[in-house]
Length: 266
Image (cartoon, rainbow, N blue to C red; front, top):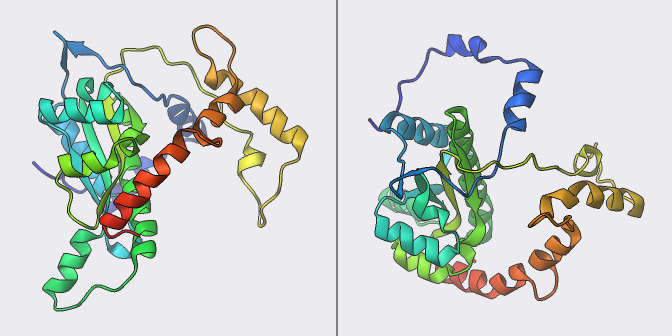
């Protein structure tokens, strides 16, 4: 079964939950990298659960009805192992299910040509909307998985060896991996992770620049997220590792730019 039956729209009123129920559900979100296994092997999602999360992914909003994304489910153990190696995320091989969410303008171009229409020259616009579609589909998938009792993890490590991943997954021009995503039964006790203060993130009508005191207060609030090995966390140091000069993101920049150009998304 590739798609679940659609409920009567009149039943939508029965979907409503209280504000407290919504808060409780999302407070239970955890990013999980250690999954339960049996005899060292992944515990796959039952087919009905897999159908449900993929149905949820395809019910995500999409720009201009275009559905500018594709999902590559990683099934073969060899492919999973290679993806785990390339991304530096071993849990791709151990999760109940693993996927790669891709921005995809290839299919749209095919459909246009099928109708005798030459695709326009819109690589930046396509990249913008296709990444958005991939994110919305992936987050729908993850939320559905959490509703079924699983936890998961977005994996930005696809950028570590992006060219090799494009080749491994045989992605045509117009298709670019955005992120991998794993889901499964958690085998770890992941603590509640803080977030920035709402007023620092949510602006009203105009962007509001936070002052130094507000930023320092937020850094203190976020420090626990960077705690490692029983040592107190230093969130600013963690951000420096990723986003500072010479950090991980800067190291990924050239590879992403090269692959985007090769895939026709730049």
